[in-house]
Image 1: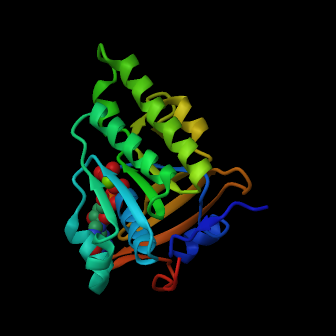
Image 2: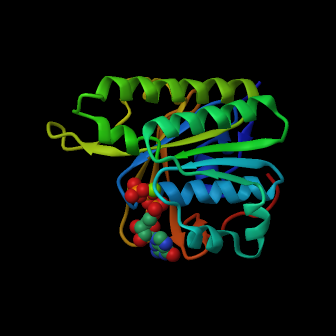
Length: 235
Ligand code: GTP
Ligand code: MG
């Protein structure tokens, strides 16, 4: 039986993903600053919350309420009413926030439709090349494992954004977070900046789909396929 999908509402991306985000696994998004990772998370958040399910949003970057407001328009209050936002200030706090979100999602007392961790590697990055690097890698892995188990057992899609570093040897942008994350995430998307408001989504890894790419545009009120406005509708 095919995995359930959570549509993103961006037709080009949903086509690329065979209908949307897999509901029983972690989707990792990596890409340079300004490539649209956070905007994408907000877009899916608004869609899921409007469908009546809760969203746990773990934000390490200071999410833009202005942008959420622009994406939601008149449905802002409805979305805020289904959003549980936490803003950890360290990797330890991030770990506790992830553990809480996962526990509540698995308990199922309220319907949870999405867990977002954005950026999942902001605090981890600060520990790299320092005395706490091994502990940080372990803490990140524990949190990612919790997210994997939760997605699998509670059928809650997870969006986990990841920062990048430039490989000096290859000259390419590579994801942080280590090999554990890149195995644990069953879908991996790379967001690339194109000129102006255009962005490219590259499907780097998927359990059941070939590699591929799609485009979206950033507009003042949301993300759109190159050809038109976002699809409305439930789910
Ligand atoms: P980091 O968190 O820094 O890694 O970046 P990100 O990938 O999360 O980027 P984010 O989703 O925050 O996207 C920010 C980008 O969207 C910037 O390049 C902004 O210029 C662009 N942007 C934001 N609002 C608008 C808008 O209304 N119109 C257009 N065209 N671009 C916008
Ligand atoms: Mg961001």
